[in-house]
Length: 500
Ligand code: ADP
Image 1 (cartoon, rainbow, N blue to C red):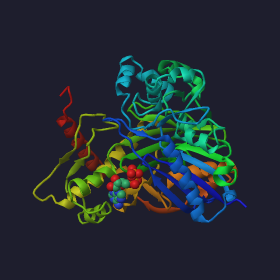
Image 2 (image 1 turned 135 degrees about the horizontal axis):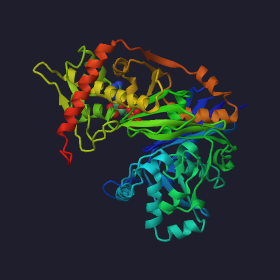
Image 3 (image 1 turned 135 degrees about the vertical axis):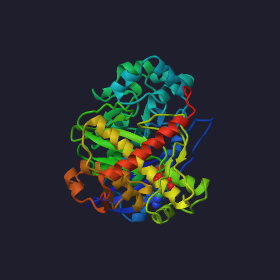
Image 4 (image 1 turned 120 degrees about the horizontal axis):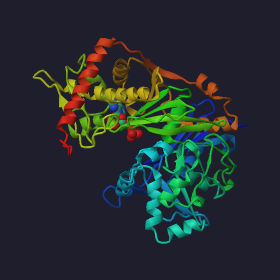
């Protein structure tokens, strides 16, 4: 009798496995960290074999902890750190070098060349992406250029490329399946999100032989069965999506205009734009959310560089709080920030301002300003930045956003969500299970294996922990947002931009 769904959540710092019931209740969790490798300033690598070994260990451990048999599992859903690039030998399954992690900046100069060659617009129109070392394509090119013999071996069909999902599928199926899903393919800068095919022009630009690429499949469907020796039963790998897209699915954001924000170290916003790609005029990325039942859903994606990281700075840099949750009680001791605005431009300003030279600032300090005001201003800044991104998502898409679904570590802060509701003038929804990434992967597998009937069925079982309604009126909202935008202008004016 099958009852469970197993999510493999392969993240940047750890591999996790969560076993869910078919209605989405977590039953067991296991997690293992692995090494971060920094060979040079700005370079980040992972050992792909370590990723696989930690991932399979936690999967077995979660099953053992739950005390269930592998044949009680309907299927496995994979969700993963995106863009990270692995190349391995087809005959042995051995990686030819370390995986190049999404954070790695080693291809910055090559990306500058692409921009200088006027490729920003053509690449955006084909892939939905901005040219950046972040995405897989230039990382793969780097491997093919720099590892002796790599390109000729790839041309001879001896090497496979994959993002982390492909690498896990390959290993889970004992090297029988070389595949990825649409959501991960859309992060490679080699996949045309309009034609839904690998793009021959981009492949030739990057010098990537097509035969090393994985087959692109639906996010929910049969990717193959696990090798019997791994779990003692052949479990179908039945769901695959990149982490942010899986979170959007786990938040039940199935309809056009539904949005989720993950308040973590940074903030990650995704908006479902339905069955058409929306190309942003304000620097948002267009991505494939998933493909289910033969239909591709697109999303707009925007990120806030510094979100919970500003709270970490209050704790570790300033020593103003002992723990992150303390921000809530301290900030509640004052009715508002007392006119203080905090701009956390620690690493520049992202969407919609795009000033890499900007640095953080605090405005509006008076003799009466206290620690509580500053802490409250930090929470405000997390909400202001989110509101800015949501504003451009609405503007770029012309789609009304009725509410915001939230998850991530800082979404446990009720005051932050109250402030967010006021600044957006929209309802904020926090689900009971904030493991939305793993849940999304599990449900993608659930749909393909019959563990759940439909997306409607998943949404009907969704449990909400809390909802926050806006209480501020329009005039009050406008005054606060005007103040924030003045603070942004002040920050930009101070920034050491070459043109200033
Ligand atoms: P990530 O996955 O990006 O590492 P998490 O989703 O685990 O992050 O969230 C951790 C971040 O959220 C940290 O930056 C921390 O400062 C912040 N955070 C956690 N709890 C709270 C809270 N109650 N209030 C405000 N910020 C919080």
